[in-house]
Each structure stands twice: as C-alpha cells, then as structure tokens.
Length: 365
Ligand code: F6R
Ligand code: MG
Ligand code: MG
Image (cartoon, rainbow, N blue to C red; front, side, top):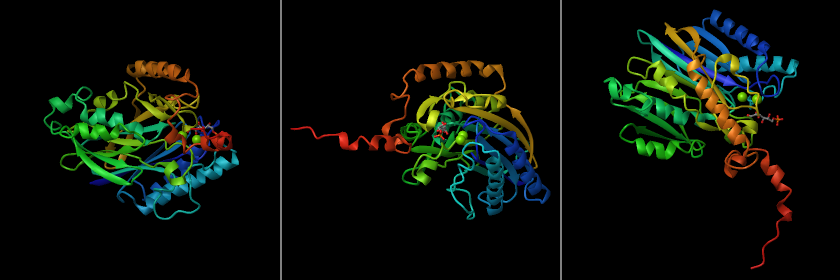
C-alpha cells in the first residue's frame, strides 16, 4: 500500500513572545484535522509543536504536493491565526506570507517535508522538528546518519546498507540540485554541505531509489527578501531493515552541531536534543533545539508518538549544548557567535548601519 507522510509546519503566533505555543492553537489544529479525517481526506494525523512552531503530521493516499492536503494545512494555519489574533499572541500569522492560497504551500511561508512510500511490513519513522534554526541544521546530522561509519555501524556491518546512500543537495541561492553518492563521492558532498546556509540536504535515498529521509528546505528570508523569522525546519527519517536503526539515527544528535538561529535568527548556537516538554526556547530565545517523534506506520495509521529524546542517555548532549551556549554567549555581538555579514543582510542590521553611511569619509591617498 502506498502512503504519503506529510509534515507541514508554520509559526502562526508565539506564547509568550517567540518562546512557545498557546495550547488553544493546538486544539484548533486538532479540530480541523479531525474534521478532515472524518471526511476521508486523511488516514491519520498528529498535531504537535516545538517552541513557537506548529507541526501538522498527516498520512493520506494523495501523494506529495497534493493540492487538497496543502490547502487543508493552509486553512488550518489560517484558523489558528484567527485564534492567535483573538489572544493577541506574538507575531500572529507570521509565517503566512501570502493573502491567498494558490495550490501549494511551498514558497508561501510554511515548511514542508513529504514522502510517498510503499509501507514495509513494519515501518518505523522518526519526525524531527527544530526551533530557532534553519534547514541547513540537518546537513551534519544527515551526513552522520547516512554516511559516517563512526556514527552508523550498519554502514560497515549490514550488507543491506553497505552500498551507501545517495544525497540530494539543493543550492538555495541558485535554485539548483545535485545528487551525490556516498561513500564514493564523500569528499565532494562534504565540500558542499559544510556551507550550511548555501547547500542544503533535501533528501537521502538508497541506491535503488527508495526514499530514506526528506527535510523541509524553505528559506523564508529568500522568499520575503528580509528577515521574517527563521525557517525552523522539520525532517522525516525512515529507520531499520536496510535503513539506519532508530538508535543509529538518534546517535547523530549526541554531539550537538553549532547551527544558525538563536536570538533574532542572528546567532550561532548548539542544536540541543530535548524531550517534548522541554521544547520552549527561553534562554536568549534558544538555544536552538530539536524534538524527535517516533511512529510505527500501520496501513497509514500513526502508531505513536514515542518521545525519543526523553532518555537520560541524551543528558550529556544537553549538558554539552548548555556549556557551548555559555561559551558562545560570552562573545555577545561578535562573530562567530553572531552570524557573518552576508547572512546579517537578511536581518534588521542593515537599517541600523544605514544611518552611519554618511559618516564614512574617503581616506586621502
Ligand atoms: C528567532 C526569533 C526571535 C525574535 C526576537 C525579536 O527566530 O523569532 O528571536 O527575532 O524575539 O523579536 P521582535 O523583533 O519581534 O521583537
Ligand atoms: Mg516566532
Ligand atoms: Mg520558531
């Protein structure tokens, strides 16, 4: 049976500030998706949030980029925005960049990760959701999961994984895509994906073409031309039986990568893996964080979630992330805690610098 798993997310209003989400918004989203399920549009759904971002996790049989599913998500976000406006929540509707829906939510603000799969006899999937960072945050994580034998033992031991994987990489500035195979082209892959604001891993496949992972790649700042909130990303990963085991996938998060986001989307900070109940971004609007919802698919039904970072085995990673936050925070407005100049062009900094323009005098030769 072919099933599509669609994860569509948006920040439609924060509580308090940009730190979390009011439960009423999740209630409204649940109502909307329950209605869609009873009409037969969805097989199943799960509504959740990380920080101030609302995630609609949905299963159906309409394939990727289905107009009906995207419209359902859009209308759900609109209904939540109305509620957010009533409660005067912060930045109500901030990620809905257009006034009207035009067939697909891509490019309109919400983030999307979708995969259509032939459901295996047992289909474990993990949905990762991050707040206060951007899509390139997954680059190092996906490299570790699918290409680093020091992370993923199966790449060496399991004959079903020994061939390696294929990475689909987007150039978000040029709107181009390239496919690179590992282990053969590992160094070429790394030459690109180390630039996490430029090249973003969109998807990973087995060499036979089966989808293994897909991420959301929206760059809100490139759509809007200015800072409109970070593109807090989501990622879907299939696990076990020829894909990395659940434990190999999660292992990649034990050494928190330093990612862009944090306060005002303008600082680097560690990506901290947390259980659901720790998803509020309170310190310096961060640190950036990620939650992991594990499901078993059963004929499209979402059996779960299991809160996969709710495990003391990740305490050390969290401690480490807090240590790194302390260290970086000491640098205040200096690089490399603050992002580089090119990325700052999409923030409010240029308007501050503008008033200094006339004060610069040419140096005499
Ligand atoms: C980060 C984020 C927040 C805001 C910050 C200032 O993605 O959204 O860190 O940038 O709280 O928000 P404003 O300018 O709305 O007061
Ligand atoms: Mg926000
Ligand atoms: Mg957010």
